[in-house]
Length: 251
Ligand SMILES: NC(=O)c1ccc[n+]([C@@H]2O[C@H](COP(=O)([O-])OP(=O)(O)OC[C@H]3O[C@@H](n4cnc5c(N)ncnc54)[C@H](O)[C@@H]3O)[C@@H](O)[C@H]2O)c1
Image 1 (cartoon, rainbow, N blue to C red):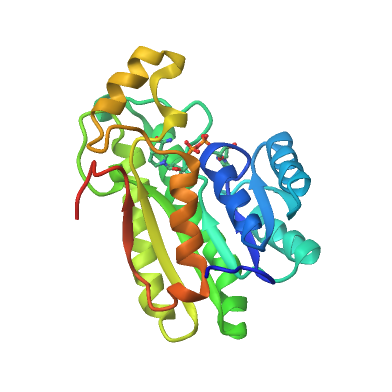
Image 2: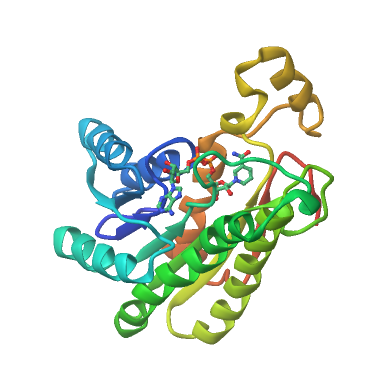
């Protein structure tokens, strides 16, 4: 099950942490993977690690918030690896992400999160869905957050607005594309190891205790759900938001 041989995937923000784990898992299942990142070195190193493990990958350096750059970057990735069958919108954390109460935020702050989590998703979807529909197969998965589904007292209103907008967009995309062979789903992540604790083990342990299953998430937790959603076997799953969060948010 879940054989991705012959498929070509694009993973945005795939240069580290969750995105790198997803890119590596897709490659292990047989897909060729375009590893996007804003940071050239990260994309190159993640692609190199996939190649060293026996997979096929190429770096794809572009900014998902720049619609023209996305168009050029997708064209270059397709020239290198072939038409994109699988898009994973993972880029969602801007450099130097800071939590701030809404009353202390300004227009630049709102744009950083909404441009990345809503427009980034729209730009990348626009660049690939026509080809997917023409070929009769496609998978779009957006990595989102519980912050897009529920109110939180931790200063993430703009991030929540962007991720929530991305979730709403994905539901409509799913319905518009239903019947073409293209599915569109989202994964709502909970607290991940990569973000938690700021390098302080006691803070990380305290945060882990707030997750019902008693631990934070890993890139492999996210990647397993992506592998399933992008497989042939998940062709009847579309328009869904799947919680991968250790029970932090139930549905
Ligand atoms: N870390 C968590 O606790 C957590 C929780 C819930 C949801 N998520 C979601 O998981 C995803 C990955 O999170 P992470 O913690 O691995 O993030 P991360 O910050 O470790 O990695 C994100 C990568 O995206 C790249 N990136 C940022 N802006 C970009 C842009 N404009 N264009 C292309 N690449 C860009 C960065 O350079 C970085 O390499 C995000 O969508 C995030 O919203 C994370």
